[in-house]
Every structure is written in C-alpha cells, then in structure tokens.
Length: 330
Image (cartoon, rainbow, N blue to C red; front, side, top):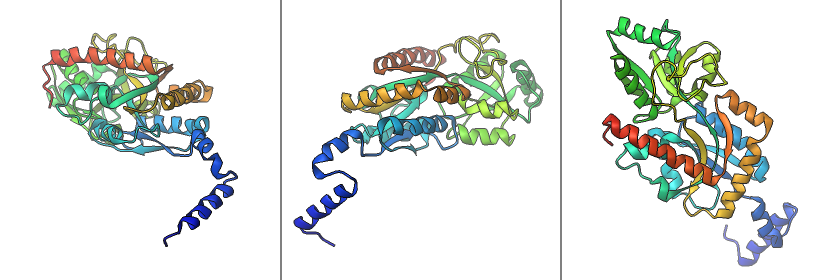
C-alpha cells in the first residue's frame, strides 16, 4: 500500500507517540542509540573469539543503551569479516573484534588480503592480551612437550601434523619453529577457525594443535586436551602448571598478541570515544574480568592510542620474524 504524504506523517507521529516520545524528540533518541551495533567476528560460533565477543556484547548493550549483536563472518582467518568492516558504513554501528592475526599478521603473509588496516580501519580500544599454546589430544600419551616430541619420533618416524586455526598464522610459524628446534618434519594442518580444530582434537583425528588459551581452556581443565607449553614471558594464571616455550628452550615467541575493537575508517571520533568509554566501564566490572580471565585472557583496558601503538609494535616484531623465516606472501 502506498501512503500519501499526510498518511506517512500520521503514521510517523503514531509510532513516536507509541514509544512515549514525539517527533521533536528524534534527535535525542538517536543520541541515546536507536540502531543495533554489530560486532563482526571472523571465526565460527563456539571458538574463543566468539565467546569473548558475546561476553562484551551482553555488557555493552547496557552501557550504550543500544542493542549489540554478534555477527559471525567466518573464513580465511578473519579476512571475510575484515573485508566486511572495510565496506560497512562509518557510523559507529559496525565494529570488528580481532586479535593480532587479522590485523597484524595477515597483511604480512597475504599478497592481497582485501584490506589495509592502516588505511581502512581505525582502532577503537583494546581490552586484553593473551598467549598461544600447544595442546595435545587425549589420544596421545604425551603430558609434556618432551613427551610429545618423543611420541612423534616413535609413532611417525619424526613426521607429524599439528592443527592450526588459520594458515599463515602465528601458530603456523610456531609449528615451523618446533620442527626446526627438534629436527622433526612437522606440517601445519589449517582449519577454518579454532572450533573445528578442537572438534578434531577431541575426536583424536589430529594429535596436536596450536591455538590461543581461550580456545583451549575449557577442554584443558576438563582433561580432554592437555596444554603442554604456552607462549609469553611468564606462565599463565589460568593454567600455572604449564611451562612457557622459553622455559623449555624455545625462545622467540615472547611478544604476546592483543585483543581489540576496530571500526571502519572515517568513523566519527565522538562515536569511537563513546564506545571506548563504554568498553572501559565493561572491562572494569569484576564479573567481566573474572569471565575473561577464566578464558585465559590478561584483562587490561587500552585506549585508542595505546591499542594503535601496541598494534604497530607487534606488527614490526612479526615483520622481522616472518622475513627471517623465508616465508613468501601468498
């Protein structure tokens, strides 16, 4: 049905009155946040990043007085979600939750990722750091890194496959380094995110995998997957019994990744500040800190410029590591 101008006006006034407001109050309604915020996640539901996004979305909606939903656009190590962010309206209603892989690593290992973080995105704020780890499946007898190395030598003649959540990622370079260190022929088996990799590890379809602590934590605590080594300069509070790679003689992976929110380039600074302020309040809440810490994150708010500096420093570190490895962008 086509409404006349008068009909459309009467309908608009009726809707406004039904909401307990009036047409003149529309600007105020817009300021309080009448549009849904989407948080893009580059990995499937059930993985660590997805779980983290849902914790934040639940709390941000209250701080912003605005609906906040998680939008999973899985695939290509987060590239699909990043490309979606690039073309999204720069109105503050589309965000991307990402760790180091999509923002810092993919542009270094991919000839044409379809986005340039420095040009197409703007940091909003960071909220945590985390570490990657090596876990072994319940089908292996190994309970430590040395035992896993010995098992690979005995079972596979020095050859083995290790799952990784995405190709050309920090986990892949860790697999290469482990193989070089111990004289093993270890091959990375890339998955479309950590969730399907974990499913194969739980089903003993693959003997080991490298992923983040948030990906491993629940199954490690349940004894279904055993984390045998973590990256970083110190043991993790979520699993203090697990040594670092450096403790085990495998240095070079001490710089820890970050988690942050990003928006399309051109997003108004006022919108960025509003979301940043809300995120700061969310991560300061004891229950949120407890939930994120239980997932294996080291929670700490990073305002926009601090996240930007952290991103640049991390990218510089990995530019050197990737070049020295001889890896050629694909």
